[in-house]
Amino acid sequence: RVCDNDFTGVIPEFIGNWSRLRKLHLYASGLNGPIPDEVARLENLTELSISDTAWINSFPYISSNAIKNLILRNVSLSGSIPSYIWNKTDLNTL
Image (tube, rainbow, N blue to C red; front, side):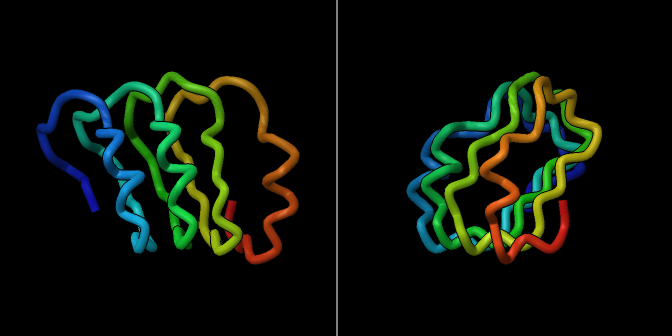
């Protein structure tokens, strides 16, 4: 969980190496920029919550079929929700 801090810069790409990561919460932090493509490698990810951050990017690709909660609030995403997201059978919250 990274929240309510004064970090600066972008989310590091090495986060994709944390293969056992189940929950990633990023909100009200100083981090900005695109959501790294490496997030797609997190196949055990069950929760991704990003809010109150200055993201300027398209909808992140989520390869995890284990994803249950996907929360993107107040993040300035562009584009639409990709159709693959509706095939996530365990998704409870969008």
